[in-house]
Image (cartoon, rainbow, N blue to C red; front, top):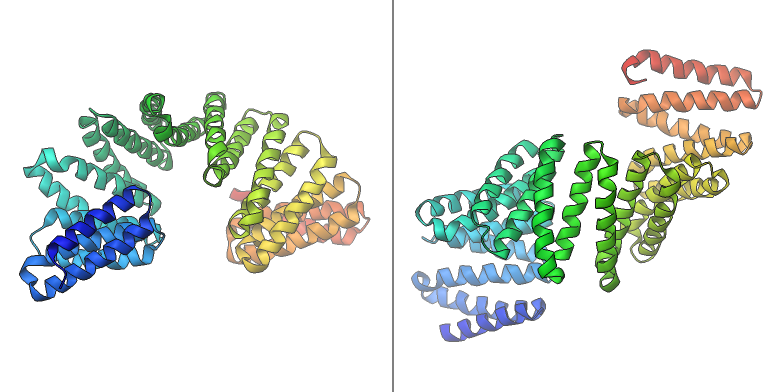
Length: 448
């Protein structure tokens, strides 16, 4: 039978392989460690169960890093089960925290919250008697708990956890790693306050997160520039929520410059961030009443999403459709109707394709058809405009039956349909569409 010394040596090898960026090799090595400790625990159950639990926890880390999240969950759940039978609270807390991360990565947020909430409770108890050792772990678990609660649409609970994480990390921020952790929690705090529609309170947290991360990025750009870009993006969102697009503009421009720099060496990772930031810049220009400035920004976003959609269509064609639609709107706003029309047609084509397999996109298709109808009418092509608007109305009639929130848009589309019928000299149909739209508006006076 292999000895504990062999298991320890293999475990050290697993760590070394992982630190070398070879998680799959680390996984294979750690699987052997688990096998050894499992056999040892079977023959010496009182002696090796904690080592088995620890090796399972490590195996979960390597599984997760190798993209095997379901397996990471399974082995970490086994580690948790073993730790529950032992007097090893720190091991249990760490395993629960890891389990929460894997569960959240799988979209199992309710289970993730439960796991991390228990981890935080254990770390709180440990920190009461060993503050020097466990306060950082407590802050980390609270930070993670706040993030999962926010993602679970529980911002009020998330705020409590994140505020406590900030308070603890502020006390521990005497090193670069401590300041980095503080900046992350401050950024989460700003995001949570923004979700609670308290942007004025979010602003100082977002600004402090950026200030700390900027200082760290000056010393170590390779490590901290991605975080700085993310924190700047969040600060721009806070300025936008405050109705200050002028303040948001330089922040968003800096975010874009950093993501462009990062995409130069890691396009697979950062080109989507460039496109997303271009969309934010478009919204900023729109808020400033500068649609002409927004057009080239959106054109670039469309080009990037088009490239991304070629290799990852399922993920990026919805983003492409949305960007093309917005480009059409900005071109129309800028008076460039000849360029807007083909963009409107492309948006309809993509949304039609998406709606065939995902009915949730029928609403987007209906709005795109309405937008296309307006564009065709501007070009004095009322017969084509009629077909687009009729389809838009038909879609929204279906949607309004199950979603009353869509009734105001149906009323608006009916009014435009009536105008097209009038242009074509179809008076009776124009009157019927007009009356139907007015009847909906009378039934929903608060929504019109």
